Image (tube, rainbow, N blue to C red; front, side, top):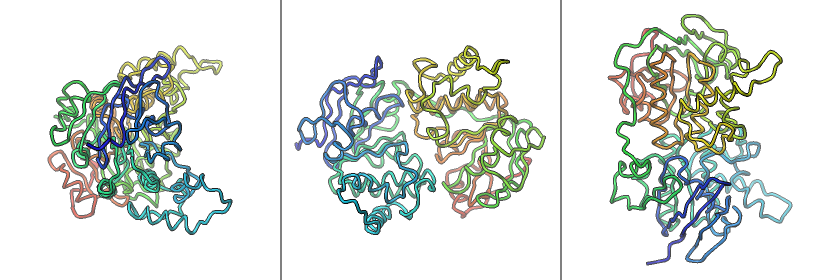
Length: 506
């Protein structure tokens, strides 16, 4: 048999006293798409950062084409033909799309002059394979989904032999994801080897040839996709059976109205939005990315000014002109961009949990009561089962799922009446998803209003009691428990279907 293009043998990685990887093995054959699975914290991203030269292994060996190599930097990895597309956006926001796509090549140039016309022409040719994004636009002006496509296009400009894709579809629409899958198949046909990290089993079983599972920083197994099932992979990832991905839904009539939105609009991204949220239920908001779902949530909680309409909480109209007004009223928002605006990565877990509730933790002399802050953080970390070294650890040291739990704890610390959650389980593993879904149901049963915006159809249908579908900034229709199907949501989102309008007595 031909030598694997990449061989990892006995790689161990320490971060101080913490062992992130323990003697892991991994092989990548030429022209294969190889899935790497595991819960958050299993060591997947650590290994990928070692392969890409971002981190150095404590022990172990890396071979490329059978030859032992030391990948001392990302530039060294690129010289070996290894490209990494990070799950988290790593672009320069103030530069254009074209400049970001060819930044590595630009850094290697010796000429002091830049041919921008050629740069933009070459960048647009690559970008057109993925989406119709003008490469002259500044990255900061693009939505998260488009920025993810720029990350992927940037990798395609490199002459890669090994391409690492870390949750590449987490922020993409279904159409964009299908375009990416087509490109992956083309790359495979041209002999390029791909490591595909994803929690989405449907993608793995559609695209990949083999799957390797990590658990707790250790190698578990490698199997051919044809020989196993998605349930087999999940069992090996979590080391246990997950018998129920979603908690039981509301089995009685919902209670009194908690939140009422009436004729809300901002004159630009959303118009005449009206709906109610009642005690005990989880309300879902679906629709295509760019349909206005996030903007509606931001408008409700003062992160985006609204020019018309009313927001009522327990029947009382609220004057919400800024996010501070919403928090004071009892409405909080969990951003879809966890690392950008959901948590403060460099601050401790305790500081993150307390950040919205500093006033109640401050003494008469204006000094923060650290003991009270620690008690608050310990309480919520325990309630949400945050896996951590201690509340003083920086949030960046946690896995994605545990970072998300800290972000949720931050919202709960102010004792909210309503939580608007935008993509609450994006990019986290199946075990952490299950824990968060159960937490949301417990919060709903405790009387907190829960609104979930999600691009994952199974999450919308499996978790929510009702779903509002948004199209072009308006609510296209409402689907009750008996009407909620994937086809019904898609038809409403694409303008092909009709459903009863969201009403204030739903």
